Length: 410
Image (tube, rainbow, N blue to C red; front, top):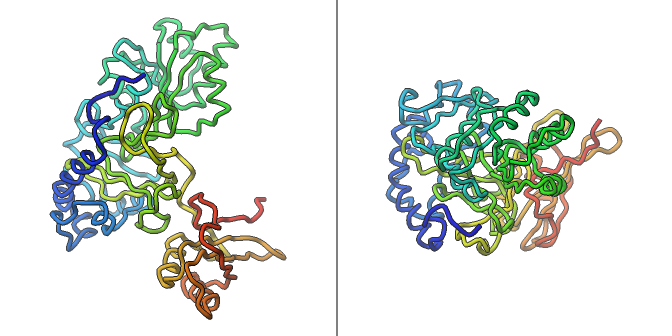
């Protein structure tokens, strides 16, 4: 499949960056009309935020903060300039986190991902994501309909009725979790129902390991992954190249070191941070809590936007050690106090029925007394004592972990 959704997908990276950052000041100005952002971005001149370096100076808003912020200022924590009544649909996700849906045809920008997976106007789509309060079902539904597809709003579960619907309508495409796709295939086998009409799929919301990918492929279904969140919509999508996931066109995506707002070098694992250029619902440096890394180069499919490796775990690595919570932000604070440190990893263990922690530090240089100085800072910041181990540059794994809890489970 070499056909692209639109010309945006094949423009040069320089054109893309110029377009996104030309629009950013207007979006920042819109965000400042919301009291929550007015407080968070106090003193910021939107006209000066016109490149990635300037953007990286703005504070990060962590998704984990949203429930408390929204509870204090219902429904959106003072972070949305528009009234709730101006949106199309209003959702809630576990947390709870309240999310508005815009009024555009493809409000979650998912049609591009479905198109890359081969969905076209002649398809009938069996959509098994939930339509109840959470936006998943509508993300897929609105995207498929934007492409001209007919949609079966099946939702999850009730496999008996799903078999009846498949037999009657003969859907050609599936949208939902990879786990439920497997359940449907196995249910069809048990009941002797022919579901061979389903030739393609877009899966999201759960891991899609290579073993399951191969199993689904053997059943004649070409399945593609979509990386989306309930707050933002589609962030990235898989293409026919099967080399990582291509970023969506309407977002500025940064990968930062967990616990900070500092962008990491290309290829290093970090936390996904999104700036959504929707002036009706701006999201400025929203850290969604997922880990990934940028892939070098461009996709062989012809899409020129940046590629990421896909979901690589969660960035929230808070650990409770000797009754005290230690957070990635604290590890980042230790690094800031010592210019010799390039990268840190706090390893939590257990010895003689007591919690232990060792701060492993990649360093640029090792002046006299560095270990003692870092040990002192570790205790000041975390209120806990721990060992410090000095390492050469590049010694720590590139997995995005700032705190590695290696204590035995159970």
